[in-house]
Image (tube, rainbow, N blue to C red; front, side):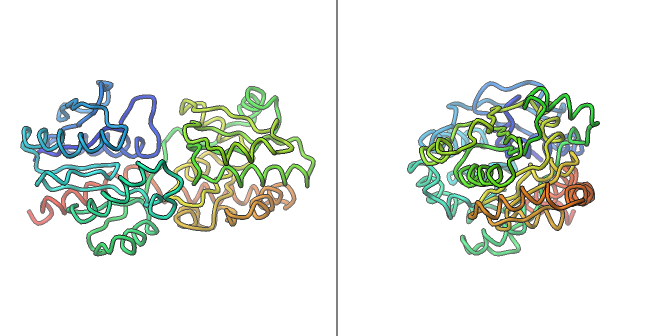
Length: 378
């Protein structure tokens, strides 16, 4: 079989949530299924190491699709030509975008539908594209893969998609994320926070990640406790808004908020493993990979009590109301005030993370491919 895959977000050294999903699943699937041909379709020059195995062929199809007008050109004009030329049996799209102009069987991976619930968090043209096309993609798809049971329910309710058409494949966690020694933690703190203990946030700087309420909670925590803790923010400031900036500028302790930008995975691992707790309090997530990264690193987790986050965290994290800075601050304070709590969370997290792996994800994605191609009955 010839399986074509949208690899627009498989960008070396710039992998984020969907990019990691692509990398970890495709690396395994292509290796485990040498009997099939895989065509990685990029919209720009690519790293040759991302072809993984001899049964992978790479195709570059311009233009670079990073704007709604270019999405339209790429998926509805260029992609059908490529799929026809290679005589693809299936098209897999890890970022959910499909081609309505192609008759090839297609699988969409919908990570979340945040744009349906919080449309004002996106530029208007992006929001209009998503809300117009993604309901159509849901109907077009042979199957839909999503990363949590929460997102499956959301797709069913929002797009009236038949439940039997949707497969859940939880995300995994990179093998690099493991606990580190006290000496390594001390060195990391000396490097980034002058030796001071810190809370950490990892992810994009986007309105739905709820940085504004996290900032307010951290300010409240500092006022209550008078502790020297820092708040370390790891992520690209691409979506830094006026609203987020206004809250930040009014903080009493903004000098204790440290922005590190995007970091290499090896550095991120040490930052995560050296933190007192991950503070991941988004108001909408399809999954939340940093929760698993913290668990695997032996770090306590504070996360939201809504959408997919309780499903991922189980009983191994402190769950808070993301709309309440007081609730978040209470959890931050309890890490210090409640004897033994942090260690309990660490131990529960190390057990919880054993339920998730990228190999399991890859197997479930392949299972969806087999269903779509009717390979299971052969």
